[in-house]
Length: 347
Image (cartoon, rainbow, N blue to C red; front, top):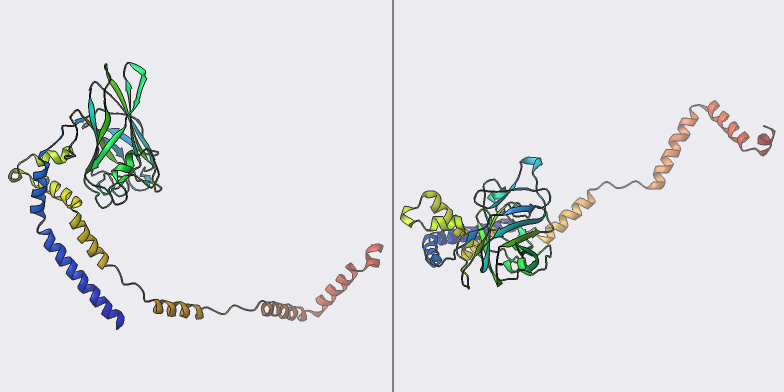
């Protein structure tokens, strides 16, 4: 009866939280509209044409027509997942590059729709950029990234950890609870990039999380030649839907923006978490647990005494010997002769 009463209270709390969640969801369209109005300021980003030099272990990646890089994942037991580093080279004639954007793109071919391979999540431990003069390999500059911004970050996995030049496996940018949609990060460069005669840029994206599969599945790198501070803005796919007047958007475009907004609404996530937590089973009463453990203990069979087992074996052997007295006597005589020094000396 006590447990039944606790279950009743728990169910009532869950119903209350679900009602609060449903009521809050009714306000999402208005909140999304207010969010869209704040996206008026956009930075112009130029997607780079990448050459893939290296992929994480066990991953086949291919450059796509939209200049993104997509990891090819096979099905079932043949799935190729791992961890390691993406290394990308780009040659550009741009001068005065002031910002870099990294888009983590959703894709239907990826687990959980991406953008990562761990059910949609990833952990980018370090994002490094190096610039070399195209006509003079001795002119090398390790690009310092600063003022990182990201549209979404998992708790304890901030975007700042991805540029601290400290590739600790358990630190980096991640998007847990925000998977299935595209995300992006923007970085300003401390000193503008661009050599006269062209620049070769090398990007290294390190994925060394302690668990495998936490690797970007699809991503794209763009640069900006604009005066800082740079606006975070929207990813290219969201921007295309956003620029269509609300009344003229297709259902797919509406769903795309609505689905994305749900992942970044902190209050919505908090209410969804509260509902999920309220549905967890009640913890087992400590006294009931103790009683069950004691019952299991006393239900075990009593182990036989070792001395008793030996005596039973001795009795069994003696009983078998008594069935054939002549064989037993012959064995005793043979044993006596074998252990007789005189017998052994004469034979």
